Image 1 (cartoon, helix red, strand yellow):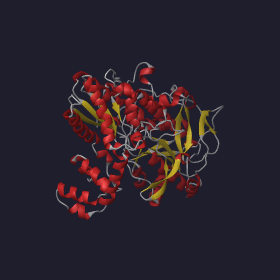
Image 2 (cartoon, helix red, strand yellow; image 1 turned 30 degrees about the horizontal axis):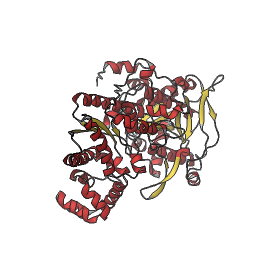
Image 3 (cartoon, helix red, strand yellow; image 1 turned 135 degrees about the vertical axis):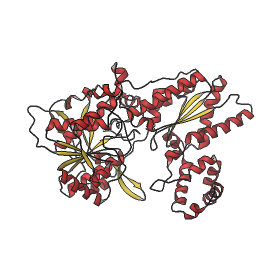
Image 4 (cartoon, helix red, strand yellow; image 1 turned 45 degrees about the vertical axis):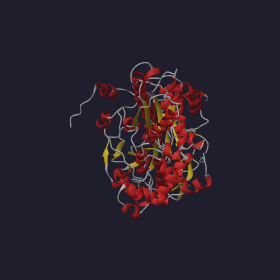
Length: 553
């Protein structure tokens, strides 16, 4: 197949990612003190006796000549949803492996973790790697969401790795994927099969971060893509002066994307799921909050604006969470409901089975949204929240409330709304300079951890608000980030998800400025498209979230 490339693709292929000083020459390791998990220390240590308590590692320049390292092979897996920069992790991994020993080989497992289990792979040679430098997407080897949880999967992986002479597997994924990586590392030690496992922190949602991991890769690029689109819409709103734009953004479990996009674009309203939950707000509270801003702007003659909505908002509303749980329980393996014909019959059946409070809430929802809540479940029997059009729900409820106010004479504006959902637009963008550099450094770091015989670690690059040469590379034990949580009725070890910290600097900045952004005299910010060439303050800046978080450190 002949590959046609745009001028930007050609230029990006030649971009050389910037790296920490420690990764630019010969590398050695400096070990810190023993670690412990963030919670449930006794339970986590019992489950991971071989990988618990390991030290945090820092990579430092090697003094003198580095000892020769015998050749070894590595396998790499892309796990879960796409995130900009994944290809650069693989490129950084490949280049560092070749620096360590030119005879080293890198194999890519195809289609995600299932590629390891099923023995589907390809060797990643220099010719292949060079086609994917600084590109978006995961198409070099594909990705998948197969969980590595069963003993037979682990054993199949051992056979495949032994056939290929693979010494280590690098899993590029989010919190669940890295949890699985740690389970795999522990099992391989117990089996004494000599296969190491290293993880790399990926997710555009931004919820894989903690005291050690400053940010997950892909978050920077995705937020810049969404913020460009929001800025474009706000410019249009300011020009046409007749639409309210309700914009739903990725982020089921946390609102980091919505918050970052708000910091970059200054919308009139930005809802934060974690705040809604903390204040025990109901749908009517949220609607009133939006209506208040719309009315104030209408009184100043401005019948337009923007509202940012996190994808997972609906599950953070306490009453809605109860309703959804009742629906999940009711509809699990419910043949009686499945046999009903017609929306009205199904709606009446649902109302008859709910508790009074949930029934009242269900009745108050627009019929289209109520129906979405009873449609397809995910493989675990839960409602697929990403398919619930929360922005349409809010538009309908806000419209009804404004009609009531107009009838009462307290609202004289005109309300016309448009809805948007930004999701896939950001997952495979050409990575920003920040993500291109960060990911390349993560991949190189993983190579040096492997060469040093480490397993059960996540590659770590921090000090990220400084120039890349001053970044600090190393490794953090995955067990250090774990706690026990109930998943599908059982207590499981998992990496703790990072929600928006309501006391943190990024959210507090939003709180301090949102009244100004809602004010008719405010002005939007127009971030524009990602810039790859030009002044560093335009091209290399990390997210506003990261800059605000690190400002006080």
